[in-house]
Image (cartoon, rainbow, N blue to C red; front, side):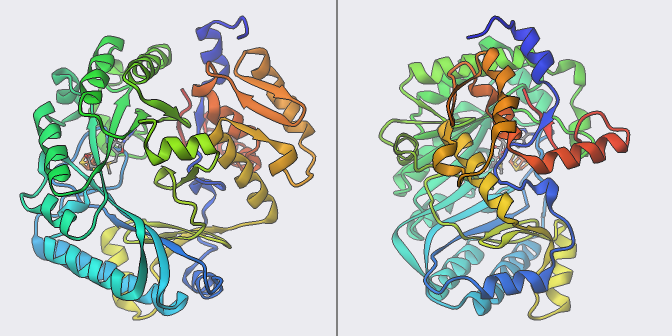
Length: 461
Ligand SMILES: C[S@@+](CC[C@H](N)C(=O)[O-])C[C@H]1O[C@@H](n2cnc3c(N)ncnc32)[C@H](O)[C@@H]1O
Ligand code: SF4
């Protein structure tokens, strides 16, 4: 490790950075990619290419002040049923382009809180999936849920429909933090949700925690991590709170003075890491943990982990078909995102009976594909061998840019091989960013517009 102090590191590596769930990142999406182009990309999918499916449900039972997701409360069941119908209709339109009976490896319902879909709606969607596709018997079927609002019959419904995994938000157990976040959730509510899912045969459990929330301390996040580890979820995601009030108005309700500063955030992250590793969890990538016998830990060990818009995954499938307002799809030719607002998404679906509700996207260049592969390995393996992944390209400029990070003990460079040190793990996005040539153009734009940091992204530390 280099001689730099934590405050030196913070001043050198502050600013805003993408989370690199994709490359190019969503900041590069433009309206130049529209419905017709995406229809062409879908039609061009190789015949036997399997697919994964993502359904975005942007509704919640109540809204949390810290939440950066684009969500709303839809009280009327009719509205939620109508949304479920739109998801099925969008799936029908996509299947008309990609053809029926493709193998499905992974199905995820995310949001928001997808258990706001009425049971009848979820049953219909699952029936359509099984009609249009061949769901691999080993496929993972996953759903996010909010432990404060699990409809009574939902765990049994998920078991009945073949779901294999739930993902629950916890964030923090401390009452003062919960009060500031507008999210009151007892440990018992979380425990009961997990038990109900396990009783129904849904055995995979992910839990989300956050550090950097208002009033959190090193001790409080450590206590939360320890208590949550006692529930033995097989996976945890530990996110740094992304405070982006210029993008997400509800975060303006969080007083800035209550937010831990970068140094405290790093210490909180380190404490959660210490507690979870002591409880038998393995660190995975930037922000995940898994029990050693879990598939995610095994993929990480084997170097076969992947990263997509849902975060880290064992799913190797190169095609992700996203449905619903704001859903993102990953295709061999590029990324595409649907219209964000539910009303505008519904209008676009109603206006034209065949077109896709696409708002924006990005077509890959060959350079994007190469850099995307390098960045994915960095984010997943904490290492990359440019001699293997770099396709003979010249990365001498990037290696030179990494030199100061090596001096600071964050990376080791051995010829073409870059490895992030255990100390450097929180800085993995800085290493990825060295290979992100599109970000430089965005930075120049932001500077031209008089903005200091790149506004699309959140704090790097
Ligand atoms: C779709 S929610 C999880 C499911 C469910 N809605 C719930 O809250 O329990 C997505 C997750 O994103 C994370 N998240 C949301 N806003 C965030 C922010 N501003 N910074 C960091 N993580 C955030 C939280 O950990 C949250 O659990
Ligand atoms: S954290 Fe979950 S429940 Fe809270 S607003 Fe975000 S998506 Fe909804």
